Amino acid sequence: MSVPLSILDLVSISSGGTAREGIAASMESARLADQLGYHRLWFAEHHNTPNLASSATALLISQAAAVTERIRLGSGGVMLPNHAPLMVAEQYGTIANIHGDRIDLGLGRAPGTDQMTAQALARSSAEPQAFAQNIYDLQGWFGEEGKAHSLPVLSSASAGTNVPIWVLGSTVNGASIAGQLGLPFSLASHFAPDQIDDAIQVYRESFTTESPTAQIEQPYVMAGINVMVADTGAEAEREFTTLEQMFLDLHSGRPRPLQPPVDPASLPGHGNRDNSMLRISAVGTQQTVKGQLEEFVERTGADELITVTYAFDPAVRNRSLELLAEAWF
Image (cartoon, rainbow, N blue to C red; front, side, top):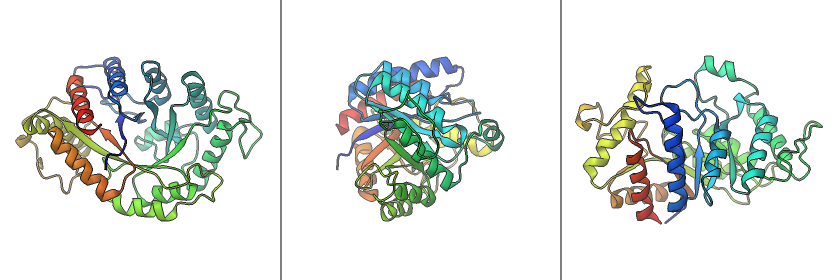
């Protein structure tokens, strides 16, 4: 039942804090995660939001790799429509050349932001066929010769690095693309729980090794889950209200930096997450959370879990990471 446990970091900015402080706190958490035995640490690309500083994933990954020794580092993910694929190959190939064979490239088709910001960032198409072609070219640039498959362009910075590529998704559409491309699938179940079971089924049923992009022999699913572990259940529920407030802000269209935890009873819907975007969550003491994670693995058959932990105080997040590692590893 004990599958690998990983971390997704969005580099949160707490109220009264700065992006500089958020990045520094993330690097401290990276050091800790490396020591505790987490399998991988990914950074997620987001734009035009006051509470997240994870916009430039390549820079964050490189910095985290510089302060860690063992843990895999990667993007969860690079939103490919915002980038020229050649630049992605050159950036991630450079990181792999500097830091060695522990770099992952997770790719998404969503822009990770609002439409206006997406237009300001747009560099490539999100259409499935174009997305697949871009992945095929990226694999060429990461290959031994460092050449794209569709055009005579060389990337010496990435040649021979063979950076593993993942497909990110939250629906059956993304799952189908991942399966047809023969690539590992990272499921955003931590904020998009509605199609979890269908998406995993579609991914496994559509998986093929016949695609020229295929890089694994069997389907591989990494599923996201929100986690908050504390010494008591009441403390964990209180700390979890920071994330609940963030989602309430998102729904109201008035995003703010992360807010301090509040009395759970003061929030609408707290304690009843069955119909919430946050219903894929494990909150409580070590044993409670371990049991919830095991139930989620049993339900989904996930090959790996990637945990997401928001906390107003970075020390609370680090304590949660420690308690979870102690219970799981």
